[in-house]
Length: 77
Image (cartoon, rainbow, N blue to C red):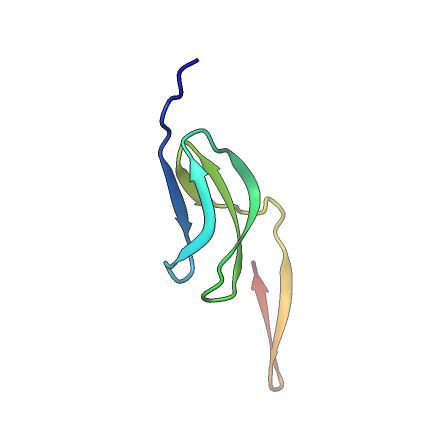
């Protein structure tokens, strides 16, 4: 059996750009993975395939109403 060396790298936070504690290899595949950044304390849902990291987008359109004083603004997320 031969051990093939695989490239590993840390995932960078898509919000602040700092290194997270999560590593991926060449054969890593993730779908809707909650990536947490210890620096900015944010959680981002990502997908990983072929060492390419993309942000996961929900197929369901959510609406929320944001109240600023007496004005209601409807936002589509």
